[in-house]
Image 1 (cartoon, rainbow, N blue to C red):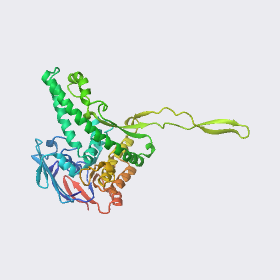
Image 2 (image 1 turned 180 degrees about the vertical axis):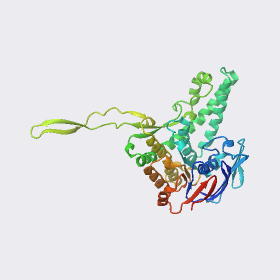
Image 3 (image 1 turned 90 degrees about the horizontal axis):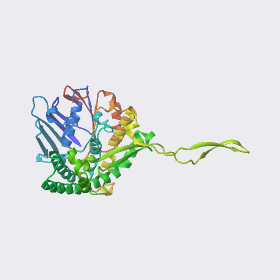
Image 4 (image 1 turned 30 degrees about the vertical axis):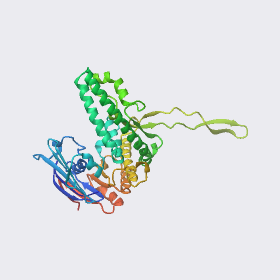
Length: 406
């Protein structure tokens, strides 16, 4: 958990120094800097912004760098410095480290904000990252395999873009890369599939809370991005000509996806009538053959408001799994990376969710050992916050200046 957060020269936040609590509420008008504070925490955890990938876009005007520093409740410290040219300096306990994943392990962040509310309609990347966030924090072996796979994929795509006809030397090099990709792909799929299986019941629980009318109709599926019954190298070789023409690799772990399906009720009771000589016309329920099941992508069926609740359920359902695994409830995941407190970032949730959904969301978070930072335009959310947290810290932000609220 973050005990103290310091931010300098990020957007309109010139110098910020906050003592934080388990629940932190940031109130301010649009453009005041409240979302920038969440962006700073996300940047420290992930090494990138959720608003723009180019540092020069979020570094304050006329400044060369932005710095985010945090002291955690175990007295460890994390820091990131980003320069306009994307040069990055990372520190853990005052020591320079060279992999962002080291800070990510120490400070897992889960973001729920308006920009994530379209992930059902967007490409597969955001949904794939949703699963990979869980796998990263629960399976130590996943990240090295993912990094190695991405490195080989980049080399392969670079070669595919350069030429439409391979020399014998290039072909031999490509086959070597494909074998490596296949080995990494098998392990990545193994990790993803195991965590996905464990995630599903938690998702069902969240749906039962947030969308009870669809509790028996919504389900998740995982697509590996290739046929896992055949080696990826074999499939890449079969598709080589098409990949050369397109200039990129079309199948593999990088094309994996998570789908949310809606299905109709698979049977209905049909009432029919018959004549009884003593009673007359009576009704009875017959065991009719089941009607055809209609299966569809949930995004094509649900309303805009229902999609928001569904996406909230997807994200919210990850926390209990992560935390119960940490406590050792799930023996199959004894390799959980570290005992850390997840940080949940809620940006302007009152604009995206109805009052019932907000109550369920806050109640769920208050019952979990996680830290919460939430933003709001108005202070009308405070009575609800005080129902679930006894001592939240409330801040007011105006033109980049953050002060304690009242």
